[in-house]
Length: 215
Image (cartoon, helix red, strand yellow):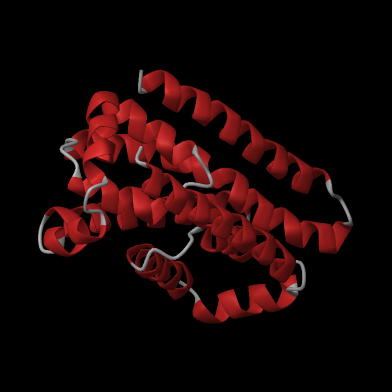
């Protein structure tokens, strides 16, 4: 990748780390009982609102980490992972479609001189490259969506790579959001340590896999 793009990704990565730390801190001060009361009042609209907010945040290139943490805090580990994965995949498809159609000129101007280098990596790696990128927890989710829309990658490869890579990519963060509340209720820090360990494994494993695919 070009030096300018690398600097931008580095700054965005630092932002994601900061948002993750802030999210964990905020979730630690939430009352689980109040959350359940609010969810019961919203009923079926709770996941719908969550999915819509996730899509809007992705289109605005806001860090998705905070929403992944919120998914765990709001819905618990498994239901939270389900809704977060669905929201992330829908957001990825919407952003990709926007970039490939009505938003192409708008997005390409902001990636001018950079996306051709990205195109070579996406085209050579295809589905497996997208899969590996989705596993990297600190690469901004929305940025990948916009960048992929500018490249020549086939939608089929983009969709399945995103679908298969999103669930394991968001799972540790949903667990982190869910375990933050459990620590408050039970004092058990094991789920929290497990979530942090999974995030570390994802970073190491996906970085190695991405480099292998791009050779």
